[in-house]
Image (cartoon, rainbow, N blue to C red; front, side, top):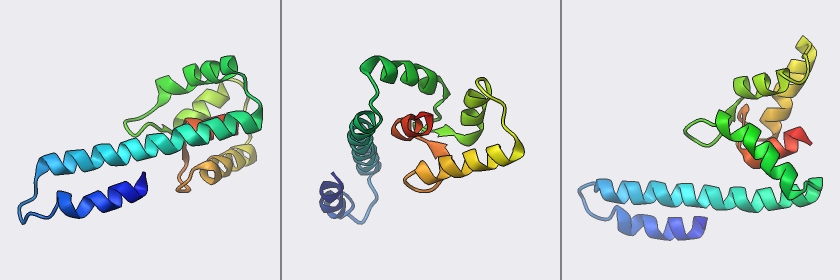
Length: 121
């Protein structure tokens, strides 16, 4: 987890010369930590919302083709996904933008899969 990454950092960058391999290892650890958080969050959201495993896989099939290189779906893509189901007035679009931003752990207008599950619910 996060504590392991923090403990590992000083040794990875202790040499005066920057080692690219250490940087790649650090980034992998950060991505693994983020993915671990996503998995835990997904389990909680699925339980909270009462999704079946079929529901989750159906929603993952909608979500996955729209992810960017960070594993998130940006607001524009979310808007397109939901616009295929319903039309948004200007006010509804503002509310939807705010909902997406509020569900993101860092307050950005994007969603990782657990947040997508919450938005759909």
